[in-house]
Image (cartoon, rainbow, N blue to C red; front, side):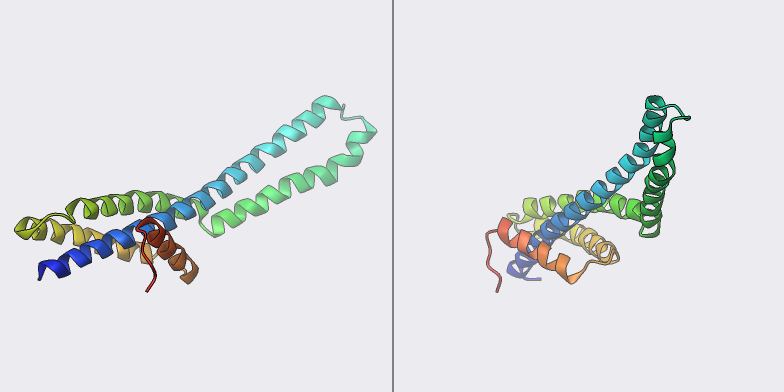
Length: 166
């Protein structure tokens, strides 16, 4: 393979790895925030109920009037959000996003390191790195990347590498 073609492929791999890193960083923040909110809601219910019981006796008319509607709403809403979390596999998506950020960052950094090499040394290093890149790309694509996310990743790479869309 011609060295100029190889260098172009290295730049492309670095470019796309960087964009994919940014895409999964965004997913990681989204799912992380959702899971933190879910944890907060799960803890809020018992704390508030305990606070009401400590503030009002169970014989209090105020407590009786608000107990059932408030308590039911306070426990049903987190339960529904928890079911959504399980159904949509937020924890798995969050975990994959963390791994994808780490792996794509490593790939982008490795491609950046080798882009100035020449000759056989470049070819020796490029081949296994390209195999890692291809494996990671297949794995990332299996995560259902949307067209909107592809555009986001492309914009992030274009901004970072100070390139224009052609």
